[in-house]
Image (cartoon, rainbow, N blue to C red; front, side):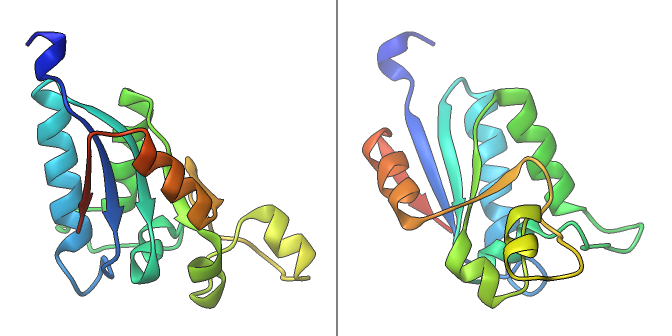
Length: 134
């Protein structure tokens, strides 16, 4: 594939990974795009999509572990997994820093997911050819 055919995508995931298909569809789209030689500038999880970043998700042994799949894909292809901090705090997803600031006893943000703001979504959008929402 020549460089002029490579498309750089940003993905926006807004659906609950336990009850909607959006996070799984986004993962499948991302995987296929990367295997086809396209690039992903980043994935932004917003609204109920932030639940994908929980380190406490424990699917049944015969089910797909979506957070692990996202983490492995992001590490392999070196793109960020950004999680909206406001939506996360409302849904009980916190990193170590937020847990300390809020005097919470624990945190549950899975690595390499990182908390960020909507400004990061704007930056990812500005640095891609296509923004695809799931």
